[in-house]
Length: 170
Image (tube, rainbow, N blue to C red; front, side, top):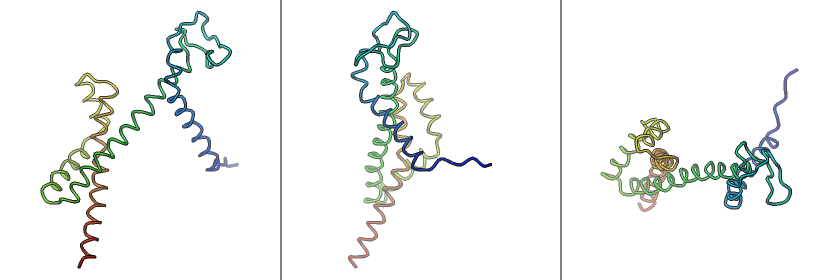
């Protein structure tokens, strides 16, 4: 007998719950952070009460929930910065290229073509390695490398609006 696929609403609900837990851990990182460095002599001990070790401790006596919050913060903040940063670059450069046209459009379009031809993740790793940077250097490189798709989208929308408005004036 064939296995039945889970229904879409159940899958969406479970996925949303997991994302919500990650966001809550990221938001509570500031509250949980002092607990991460608190050494506990009993390995894996679970405390009782609000400030206890809800998920226990690791081999070094650090609170697992606090470490989970630290990991969630970087897992949420980095992609959010990449998305917002590439969107802002796309709005600025795409709007400029679409509105001004001519030389500005040519330069911005060549920038987009060049960056789209590069393998983004590999280049981000190489630049971070060469510059000796870590997580945030990689995030900033990814902002630049993921912006051309936004640039092209905004440029096309601005050019469409510009041609539509000129037709209405005639």
